[in-house]
Length: 90
Image 1 (tube, one colour):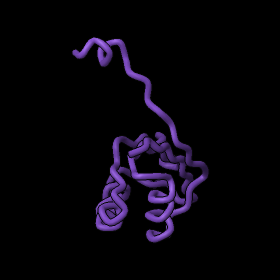
Image 2 (cartoon, one colour):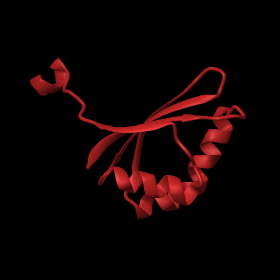
Image 3 (cartoon, rainbow, N blue to C red):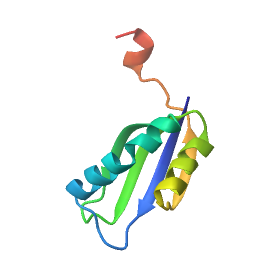
Image 4 (cartoon, rainbow, N blue to C red):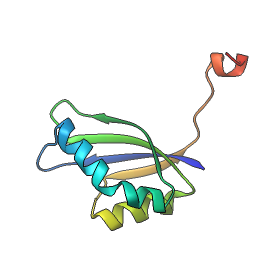
């Protein structure tokens, strides 16, 4: 599994309830492509969303977005670096 970061913009701002509903609506598609949500950050005004996912590869997340009709501004793969606590086994 790889770590992926996604940036999205919305012409009509989202609130947390709308974001939760969109997530629930497309959950079966995420499961098919083995995409797992890790965390999201919605801008205060609801016009931008930043998400962290894990997936088998970048194409799996692209497939979910295509199937759900969701666009995105940018997407990239990254490798999280361990913190000092992770290295110490805490």
